[in-house]
Length: 107
Figure 1 (cartoon, helix red, strand yellow):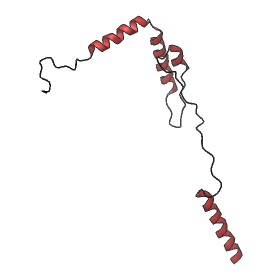
Figure 2 (cartoon, helix red, strand yellow):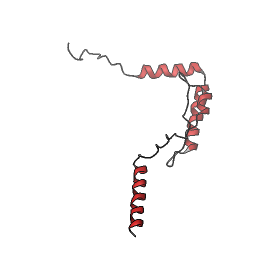
Figure 3 (cartoon, one colour):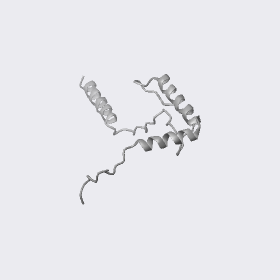
Figure 4 (cartoon, one colour):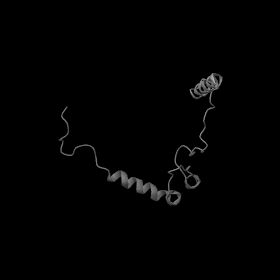
């Protein structure tokens, strides 16, 4: 009986050592989902159509993301001059940070 008890204690000790990392090292874990690779600089409609996001357990609604990416791709394909004009209008609509009446901080 004492032999069986000693064997159980040794077995539990070996399991504890392996669990604590004193056995052979564990292999490095790699994520199996591919990274979303986008080119540097301005994105094109083709870039947007090619994007695929990995899903997880709590994931996302793929149809909504795909619809948004398709909309953005169509906007990117629109007339580039119209996009530049729209960006200029947005810049003009931003408030000017300099005070008009000179009521800014005194130096």
